[in-house]
Image 1 (tube, one colour):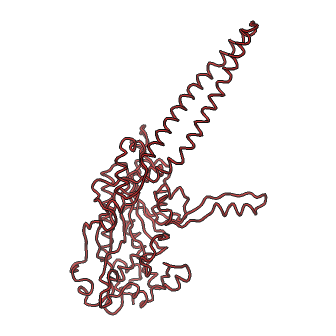
Image 2 (cartoon, helix red, strand yellow):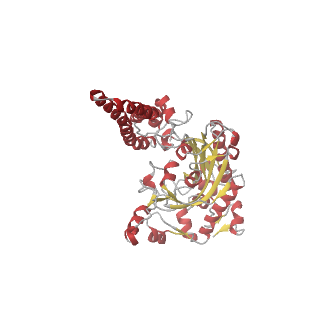
Length: 481
């Protein structure tokens, strides 16, 4: 969520930010609702002040008039009785006026809140302008020594590559047919050395990030709606999440329970990334500044509906509904320079991991149109996959980069929504609290990362060379197959 005070001061920044991200947001309506809400609050405050004043004055006034009433007769008595009734009626009238303002405010609140949740974080000024991922800019690329990008896989290795689909079939590493039969499209089973390689990658990535000072956490993958809203995945990404209608089920069970009582449990959602729980665990908290930065990581199962991806990467392990991911999160002080340093550090960690796996890759600077609602900046890391790309006359794919990691800088966007704060000056600080900054990045997502590992390290005899850093996690095995 954005800072409403800052929106009032510089609405054009948010209008332009939404335009650059290609998101339709009615900033004028937000400002109009906010203005009306503040007017009503001012009126209410004035009425409450008058209410307090009258409460102090009413007793003495009525007492004085009641004394006069004992001696009054005729028209004077009637006038005094009328004045006493008017004084007694005034608090009730004020109470009714305040209640009416409460109703008006209640009518404005939900719409204003709903619109505020749709306003995106403006992109940083140095993020390149663009409409979609097609406008992203390559920043750098890396390959092991001796690799020639111009030659492709066959030119570098001396034989035509298999796709990962062919490799897992020939080596018995996965079972797509049974996976689809069991759980529907975009489902799979990993088996034997395929499953072992999957867990080896996850364990290596978790150890890799933990060795760099990140605290491993085991977190829920089922969360309440407020965690999805707070981390910025709702409302915009609601169509990508799996929903568990726990409230309705509780109500239905309650109808059949003795006495018809029901717990009315909250609906739950399967998370698409460990980021949701790593950030959501601090919702509503004031973090001790001395503990910042918080450096956290988790390995969790992730679920994505892949809505809108019909026909895209329907075969293989690239675009699937369920996968496992090692995620890293940083929560730091509200300082742009510090956020930028952490962003660079987190990207560097992943680059080091990919280099240790000997995987050719590149860094992409995402343009404004590809940032999503919550990011001020985002860098994608793509691994080169020989089995992707256009298929030539010889039936062999040309090879193509595919996204495997994404590093985001969000400033206070998430923490404001989650109400995660710290007090500058630590426990001794007396000033107001400040919203933290947050960042996140993928360390490793598998089985997608298995694609470049299998395809890049395949051998002419059909086997796959295991990268040296993974061998301890596979009982010292140097090859698969």
